[in-house]
Amino acid sequence: MRSYRGLIEKYRDRLPVAPDTPVVSLNEGDTPLVELRNLPRLLRRNVSIYVKFEGLNPTGSFKDRGMTMAVTKAVESGAKAIICASTGNTSAAAAAYAARAGITCFVLIPEGKIALGKLSQAMMHGSVVIQIRGNFDDGMRLVQEVAQTTPVNIVNSINPFRLQGQKTVAFEVIEALGDAPDYHALPVGNAGNITAHWIGYSEAVCENTRACAFCQGNCGFHRGRLATRRPIMLGYQASGAAPIVRGRVVENPETVATAIRIGNPVSWQQAVAAKEESGGWFGECSDEEILHVQKLLAQTEGVFCEPASAVSLAGVLKDLELGRIGEGSTIVCTLTGHGLKDPDAAIAQSVQPLTVDAELDAIERVIRERLLQV
Ligand SMILES: *Cc1c(COP(=O)(O)O)cnc(C)c1O
Image 1 (cartoon, protein in one colour):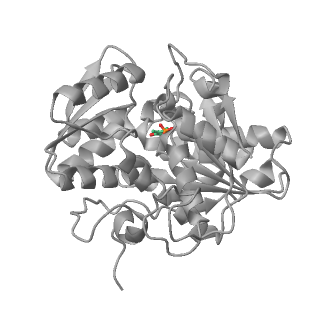
Image 2 (cartoon, helix red, strand yellow; image 1 turned 45 degrees about the vertical axis):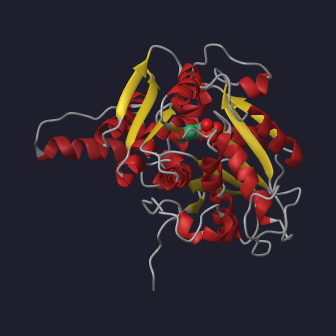
């Protein structure tokens, strides 16, 4: 049996690659779709909630899906250098795939506002890390400007190949469930990922062999439909960085969920289109709600995602409570990144370790006290 070799090889016939395209891959994709067992019972909800754990990609976030395509196409076109603005995970993925391809990577990050794990990745993979005294939106603007004057290839999600790679998450969900779920929820920052999910789901229901309203000719060779329907799309933002929910640019976005600390998303219009075409909605959660659900998920299900990822589940739990999502529904939440990306956020909200002498009775005392509590 041939082993899994990444999403480009798996979905070659649905992606814009040629037989001789030099594929740059770290075997990304094929992430687990985990059904939550304990949380729905705990909350007395008769729903099926699945989490698509994108934190298990090679660099720990879904950004790898887009980056394998973006770097592959950059190398195919002869590029020697890539550049991105990042809240952290894009730079981690860009740095790793550039290393794999043997090209130079420049990353622009907001000074002091990226999670430690992500910064360590960009540094370790040898990219040129440029911290700017500004936020992600400033970085995004600068990257677009500098690409006009220097020979660098942008790998932010305005690069259309990024979304092509990221759309494969929808194919995997459909394969795992046998069809699309009723609802698909995800965090929205720059809004590329919700756009990519919608492209994937739309191509999956496409039966035509030529360009059509669903795929606009983008899905390459059709191999028949994968799904019978598309899900209702739910996009959640952090209250301090919720431009799409509010309908206006947020000048100084602030949230503990640094991956979605974005005030002026590049794919704003496409995200609104996905919401409208699917009959979905946007919602917001406070930092407190986000951290609560991040911890709840870690402690009841053993799944550790980063704060930004938890907003998808936090939003769903809130909308279940409000009755906006009906009983009996099947819901998929994309958990965009791994909890280990942001150890500071995890440690700050956890019970601190006990320190005792290295003696048997000290340990016994702790065990007895703890077991009495349950
Ligand atoms: C990039 C990122 C997001 C936001 O995705 P967009 O495509 O920018 O909307 C959410 N969560 C994590 C962990 C990310 O890295």
